[in-house]
Length: 303
Image (cartoon, one colour):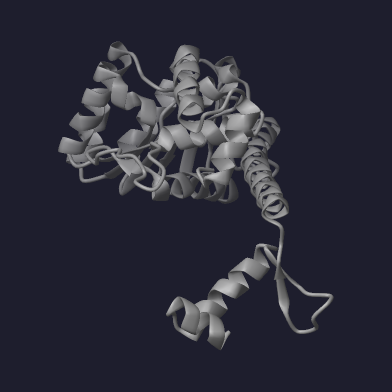
């Protein structure tokens, strides 16, 4: 190690750390011929090992995300079928837009400290935004802390973006993220409204005061909130990769086997937008297929 340190003009601690990293990556192995010495793995074999590890890590991340979403959907669906056994009406199913709106109005009227919101879909209609203003203004004027999560694609929708700016000007906090938890409203950390199935809104919503369910929804919200971008902040590209947050998420989704249509739905953008973005990414990677693009992206550390 001292010879390497002298040759490279680096401290021995740095050499030791580098060797440990190479060993952990499988790029150095113990020599069978010279006991106590190390040998370098052939570059072609080493690259294949690294790609396999990155593919395994990506698959594991995608599986964990899918499991969290499935767990949330199962929990909500199971709660929808629950009937209180102790006489306490802690969970109710809300059927129809009017029933959901009526419950939102009741909870908003009585909220005292904070509201956590995940919006449904990429953008809301101008009529829906206008209808929401009086209620939003009322809670903000009363000093209620309002935290709202939108999908990143709302930055391209003038009406939704203007409404989010309006909320921010009144003291609300608005952030955006490429991927969101299920649409929800959580009031004072004690009551929540969540769609039973975001893909089939006709199934209605649940209003629950079950502490475990409310806590679970808040945990999902906080996990996304911590990595989301404040609305007023510039969504800049990662200087190390040149990727925007949405492009990175798109690569992850498609590398995990998701179709263009499903990826577009998850990101809240159109099918044509996904195809255009993926075409540009493939061109930057010099790839001729999605599979090759995934390998090259993993090789460069993009995903």
